[in-house]
Image 1 (cartoon, rainbow, N blue to C red):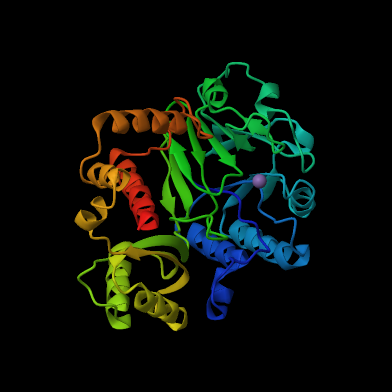
Image 2: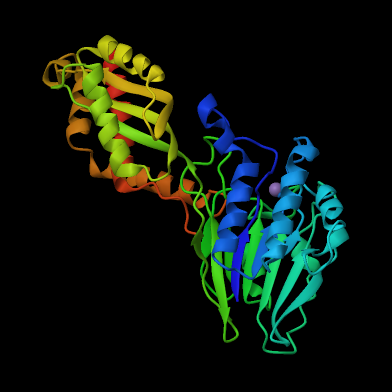
Amino acid sequence: MKIVLTGDLHLGCTSTRIPEEWRQNCRTVQAWLRLVDAVIEAQADLLLLSGDILDRRNLLWEAMGPLQQGVERLSQAGVRCIAVSGNHDASSLPELAAQFSNDVFTLLGKGGKWQRETLSENGNPVLHVDGWSFPSPVVRNDPTLDYPAQSPTDDIPVLGMVHGDPGVSDSKYAPLSLSRLQSLPVSAWLLGHIHRSTFIEGSPWVLMPGSPHPLDPGEPGAHHAWVCELSEGKLSAPLPFCPARLEYSELEIPVSAAEPPSAELLRDKIQQAAEENLNAPMNLIRLQLNGHSAEIDSWQECSENLKDWSPENFRIEKVQFSIHPLLDLAEVAKAGPVPALLVSALETLPQDLHDRLRVVCDSLNRHTVFSGKELPAFEISDLSLQQLLEQHLRKTLEQLK
Ligand SMILES: [Mn+2]
């Protein structure tokens, strides 16, 4: 049995900050219809939707029609949909579900009550799907506290579906705890709500599928649905499926003091970085221009011209200009004891200062939202620590000058 997993489509929305000519292809409705085609083409048996399928801020008629059409086409191709509702579609998804028979579109866990649907293959039960739906847009309790955690009476795998906020215990969007999820007697979890995708191995594995189409620059990186196989009573780990046509990304372009400012050179550098780093047919780039130069104003002018540039597969959404004046460090060091100290720190960072900063960074790392052993903590590496310090020391020296 082939299963496609996704959530957070937010039908009715269009990605932000995109050029007008990309608009049509950056509607979430468009992404949904492409996903439907891909699911049919892959001959999947089941499509699982983990909430926030419909966006509450947008006109429902604009989203409801295409959702309905997609479900109908899937049903004709023999693909069943099973969904739970999220904070956005707590009331609209039940409305949609009411228009279909249960074997075409199943909304699990209506009214915030856990519900099980057992799927069969050739007349034999092969998979239990347990789901819980938002009864209203705000839910302050962890829904898994009511999960009927009786140990399964058969050997059939259980896939749990719930929309909620992992690791945020005071969230008003159904706080979830990853360690609790992984302590329950299920084989796999499909979550919804977080738009960036994360897969956590283990038993059960936990998939946060992310949104299959990105909505704004705050959702950088690859977006896609996922696919897994159920065979011989085992669910395989999910793999990316149907990549989004749009990707938001950040590109760093270094400029060296030896390079004379030129619009052509800048475009060549960006083009090369684009070829090396961009994968989607449409990419919206936030550019970081880094380096040192004696001709900052000219570089500034070159970067302003980038706004009118329309290459085939990317647009520049924003330029973060970080080119700093050239400093003759030997000269600056002569200005007094403090500049001399800073210059020497820039050349070789004293070990005790490095160690103390390392401690601060480690404690920052531990304070990120997904801290603890459940997910890897955000890393401030030694290299980025070095760069961070260099930036600040240089800034201080520029001001002293
Ligand atoms: Mn949500």
